[in-house]
Image 1 (cartoon, one colour):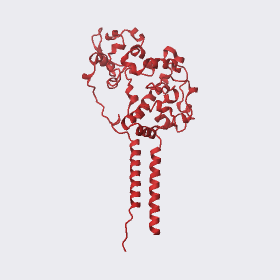
Image 2 (tube, rainbow, N blue to C red; image 1 turned 120 degrees about the vertical axis):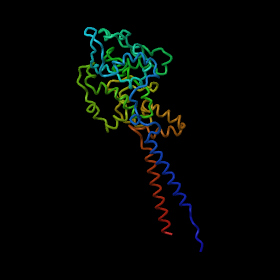
Image 3 (cartoon, rainbow, N blue to C red; image 1 turned 135 degrees about the horizontal axis):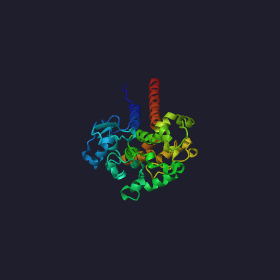
Image 4 (cartoon, one colour; image 1 turned 90 degrees about the vertical axis):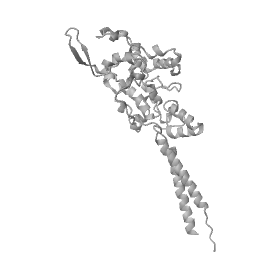
Length: 339
């Protein structure tokens, strides 16, 4: 008697196992950001090389004092060299400044040239600070950032309406440290942390908060006690997704709404029409489409963006394929035993 080997069931099992392996690989890929190492992994230079920075020579005249915790000068009366501590808020890190968006400007582009004389005249502290629109408004070079539209949104925001001229751009954006590319970073966590820290700089710091109001410091946790899974939301979603009027034509929305108008419906984010697509994930989706093509890009975008962190689309697919594989193997084994 000649026995023929039935290989069809084996091929079915092999194909299903291959599909399961592929799905599992996609899940791991979606969970792990490829490419550049995180900021924590990168070695930071201990000393900034100033040779490649425009106006660095002029700026060092300021940073030789304002770039460190203490400074020295010669007292013209006693002819002695005096060492003093620099006031903490006036100390500027070179490492931070030379990666900021304003690193190419001279200090005196924004500050009076009278600061070139030491000791500085006391009335210089009263000089008006330029707003973003004062320098960037109407300039074609910066047109893509839409500063005029940002200014309009800001004027309509609760910050401007309540505090008028007292609330300036610098309340949120320090001109010496501002770094817009943090918002288009491939590492979404860094983008979220960067933007949320801007809000928490006032709403989480009583000293800054009470510069504009005598109200007690708000307890952010108790104010958001209605929000399920607080920790996940706070670390995976920016404050402005719920507290700003969304505008997908801007990098970041500036129309901060009153608290009574804040988003409180889960489906606003956890749905196919998620507001996150027009804000937080806008760059992520467009990058996926450019890299992977429109079909795969949109599919992968859906798998990694819906919800406070990501959806479990691929996880469910892989589990379904795994369960189906086990079922087929069990049925095949049962049929073989029965024969």
